[in-house]
Length: 139
Image (tube, rainbow, N blue to C red):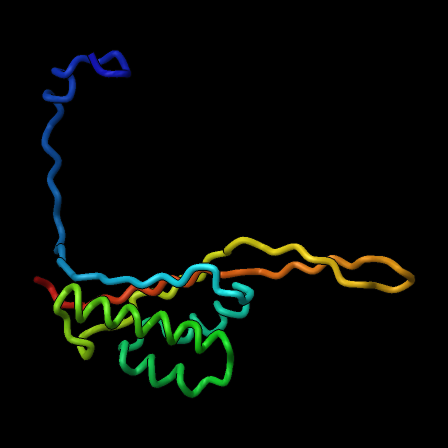
């Protein structure tokens, strides 16, 4: 008996499921930067611009953006490209950015002096930047 109280014969009597469609076996490589000291909202703004681009083109594009978040994403993207070349023997020219995900990290809660001797809260946010590259080829 399994946990739901059904015998194993129940599962053996189910009809086979027919799967239709084309499956492509693409290689995906990722890199993750954790605890980046920048607000996720600010990082997402730049991360949206590189999704779907070729990886080498995205690196050049990020170098032209004068923002701290572009530097953080560029560093993560270069790491993902290096992971693909060294661990999976993929060519950098064949890679494209499948997704650039920015997740919320922990928040540092601080206080700053306010008017009339009060304390005003400050929330120093952090980000986790995940970049997934795909070769787009079927193996």
